[in-house]
Image 1 (cartoon, one colour):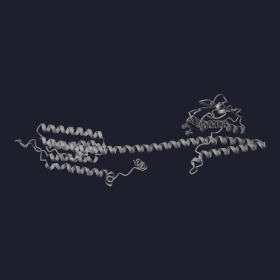
Image 2 (image 1 turned 45 degrees about the horizontal axis):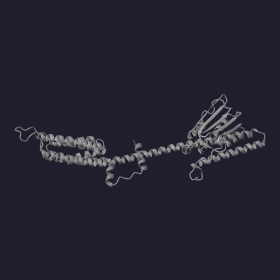
Image 3 (image 1 turned 30 degrees about the horizontal axis):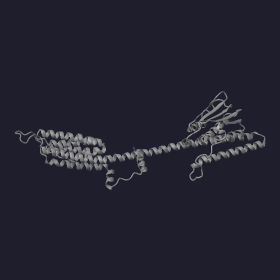
Length: 425
């Protein structure tokens, strides 16, 4: 309970809701029970006033044998007391308070001294404010209709005079109508303001949810990029370092070491481009990689590390890229991760072939090696990240064995990926 209240207060503070105008209105808003007690007390005093003019009820003042007196003022007073007690719950039970107010009015009618009381005004107001405008008008129609019908019957039977009947109906109708009109006005504005505040709270919740979703998406993107950069670069560095340590040719060892250093420097550059935006004050850090990873560079790095890698490019992309920048970037990352997996899991491969085919509407990528056995490459962050990357540009990617010792990574990407998909990248 306290946690929900605290959350609501914090949310209202963040909404920066204006203060209720007027010192008196703010006081009553902060002390609703005190307001209801004062209203109930005023209703009791004003509605018991007419009781001083009512004698004991008798069926007729001209009967030879008098009817035993009935203490009408005491009965009506008890009804008024009950109705005013219910006033303390008028915000929660407006319908019950409304019915009790009409019961008091009808009791006054049977006392042969119909009088319009403020109790009916407050009850009609409460019904309009705390239930609905429709309930207020419906209650007014049914309540006054029933009251007028009873008064008409009593006039036709000679119990009431015409003047008393008209006075009673007019008085109660005036009170009920004034309470309903004021309540409809205030209640409508109250519900409108509550709807605006509720909508503002909902927008605030949705804003926070969108922020969390965006943060999660960005974390996934950074994790995917970091995996591709670090995994590939370290795999190449490890392979070059192992080759330099295994050879007795100082020239080849020096070349391998230089290539490992160049690969590490390239990885550091890419990592700065990826993470620089997360650092406050680093205005020069790019928001995205400046250029897609070149498949030619990826295959060349694998060749320098001693792997039998080949690259074949067919179609318009052989001379110049025929796909959107988002697709070109995805192609580079897919080739990079595919080569990394082959270098890690197919160390005894005799061929690692990379084939890229550009078509008018589709780009196909195949990375095949003949040195993988078992279930290597079927899970992990690398393949999952590539599948997400392919999905972002409207494509698909699969990685699975095609024979006993051959493994194929196959991707199909739409060449004309939209700008929206590119931003997701």
